[in-house]
Amino acid sequence: TTKKNPKRPDMSEQIFKAVFFDLGGVLYSSPIKAIEDYELENSIPNSTINSLFLRENNKIAFQQLEKGKIEVEDFVKIFTSECLAAGISNINGKSVMELIHKSFLNIRPEVVQTIHHLRQLGFVVAAITNNWKPHSREAEKRFNPLFDLFDFVVESWKEGSRKPEPLIYEKSIQYANEIQKETITFNNSIFLDDIGKNLKAAKKLGMTTIKVNKHYSSVLSAISELYHILQPTILKKQLTLPIWSKSEYEQLAINWMNAFTGNKPSHLLSFYDIAVYFNDPKNKEGILGKKYVKKYFIKALAKNPAWIWKPLEIFPHHQYDTPGFIVRFQIKIPIDEISSVIETGLAVVKINAETGKIIRNDIIYDRVAYKRLKSQRRSKL
Image (cartoon, rainbow, N blue to C red; front, side):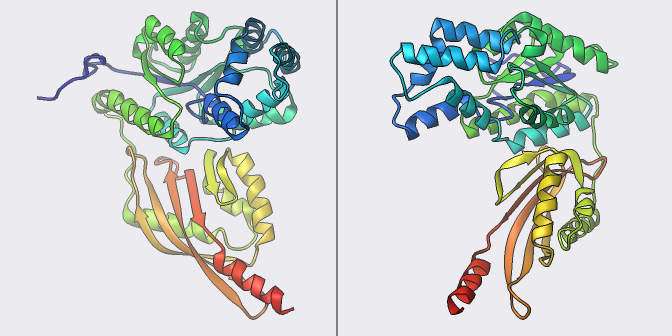
């Protein structure tokens, strides 16, 4: 017999209809981890910044910021004043907010892939986030791809309510029912967050909760737990996706890889989903959203129009029933009119089984031989 976790109720009969994700600490890397790393790198005593957030004036101001009652500039002034009052001169409100914003650039591709897959299966998938009014037009634009990734995003500053207050969870269920024919309740919803009090509040309302810790391994464990909980629902509702044959994978892989050759960004982009995650040696933190991938492709293809990309081997690669493939490829890079070098790499591709569009793409290669030969040519001049 299977030994059951006493802390987790038996969910073999439970049917779930919606999954809600936190952003910072779940979809993005944890701001808490970013702050800890910053303190370590700058020889600042551990938990110094966190202790500043716990000062009453800062605590109140941050809650007001997340409820949309004050703006970033107001919080920066209050936080900086509290730093000075505490005798700390090497930290201020502006540097802390920049640090938090920077952590939001580090996207977790496994979570992006999971969100795509759950939406394909028919679950309502949304985000519940404590955030604040964007301080600039550029900051607002960076947030836009989330509205393509999720069915909807519940933002604390727009709702005037923040986690762990019940109202923001109630609003989330309300919005879910506006886009779903079946009734969605707290009892048939799952919520993933990295902060205990937010999860405790959601659980009290009836939601099934999953804790995501700040470390990367915890993200993978949380995804595994999520699929374990959802498996009875997937089986009972017979939620299935189209199955791709080996020849279909190979043809897509060949057509997609060939599209990197030449300066045809529109053609290359036609292979990608609107909410794609893209990662390569130039973008190690990843890019979310076709609009931003487009900007990168336009520059990269224009800079290297003579590079010739060629697939060498193609391997089907499935994960949690998300179809995809791995490609071992080569790039022929011309040095001048008579010489060139060959570099090799790997590409991991995950696709939407229904549309055939790429939802996740990780590309790994280096240009060691290219750089070495180019350096040798320069030294001879």
